[in-house]
Image 1: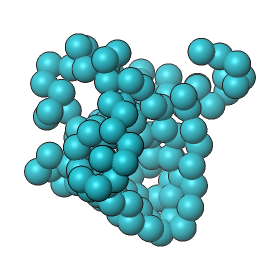
Image 2 (image 1 turned 90 degrees about the vertical axis):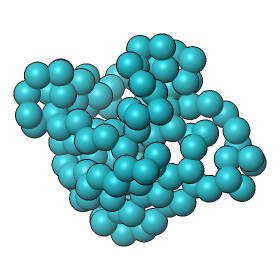
Image 3 (image 1 turned 45 degrees about the horizontal axis):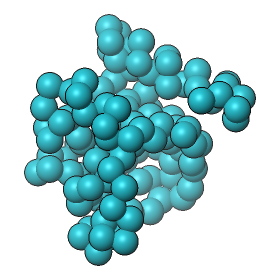
Image 4 (image 1 turned 120 degrees about the vertical axis):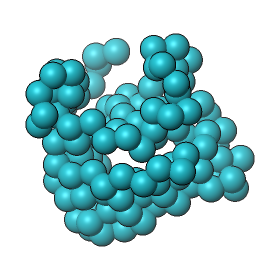
Length: 122
């Protein structure tokens, strides 16, 4: 599932109550298009800007503080992505920049290309 979200400045808090109401094991791969996001999860705090992307684990508490923003979000079941991560617990709230070249540029380009796919693409 890919979504394109945008809004004015806001804070998003997902704590134990929200997790209990929706305990689906997912990762969000958020690609920051405009604005900034101060992401906190797993004891890490990172400021994301345009061209950055990061993972969010929906089974662990997190906060996101956005300025006016736009984000492309790729939602993946954890069972699909977790086996590919060296340490899933330490992979969230880590800034990966599509502007720095290398793997970040490849992944950022891929994430941006998903917006061009028709809704029927699995």
